[in-house]
Image 1 (tube, rainbow, N blue to C red):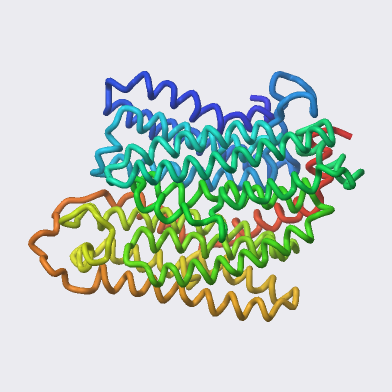
Image 2: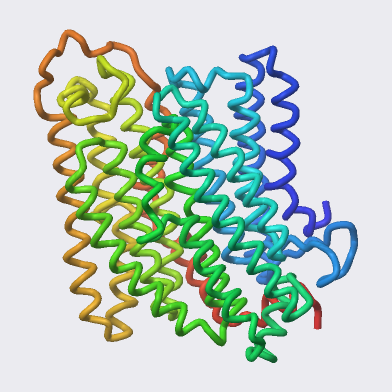
Length: 496
């Protein structure tokens, strides 16, 4: 196989697999096995791409249709995109595994697995594409799949949450199309490498600043950055567990990925101003998300607000902008994806045992007490979310604080450190109420619930990468070095 074709695998495998899964809708058992096999194959393809990128030491570029850049569509696997795609499919595979062991009615609908596979294809395509319009197309596939999966939820508020998600995403899509139009009118290209070259040569075009502002708004909505967060808690609380675990972990990282590209490739001239915005909003998000999570009375909403806070940490790392800070932000993003998916799955396990299908604390108080396996996993996941060893959450937070100290940002470190302790507060409160407090009516707790296999795999990986963090740290550090020399990306795509 031509090495450049490896970039196609993470997109084509789930995309074509989703079409085939739709044809298997009359054979539900075969469809479920097919979905797991396809997602596993896509994960293998993403790992092969990752290995090729690091073995060759340069980006892997696929020119679709043989058309040279910037005239044709290009797909690019570099250090950042390859790492994010591997992260995506590791979590997505466990999402399918969780769905196979879930008692939610939605996972047995004929359209569930095709939509789940298209969700994965949309996210992989948005990350791997080398031009902004193709990114918009894949982002739309992501939105449509996520909206339909949420609308099919067993929760009575699923349709309302799906409407909120769709209309917020529609707003982001409108902003992105406006930004694409501004950039094309100003520079005559949408290829990111070519655009980076042209913007660097002439940053005085009057339509550039509106485009920058619009793209910042797009990625803030996509990653639920404060104050663009208000749709997110309702959405993730009502979505099916297998879906919310994906949307709150890897799907929000599309916005994070966008900020990496904005500050290190597309708009290097305007990067200091963008980073200042990210630092301010990231810090506010840490404070707001932590306080809101501590004050809510629903386990899933608590974890949704927690995502706002955790994304804030990542934005602070991107805002600092040094190679160590960028590497720390990438590691934090990978860690959060696995930990948050596992925690939401564990919330789903608890809810599946509750007498009423609800994640409200007054319903699930004590429900997890007899669930020894879920109790241990939630405790370990909470340690990872709070950044306590031996989990990989500690590695990400330690490197983030180390990069801040190296940049003499001690005032901000004090603020985000104090706000970070809120994570421990709300996680321990939830642990005590769900897994320690005796249930009011123990006889009503259902003896059978969702499978623990998927969170076991993710928490196991969280601990493994905490004890053996060197491969992830090295990969993120090298990717950060690539990002701070954008000429590597530009030359790989355009040649020369």
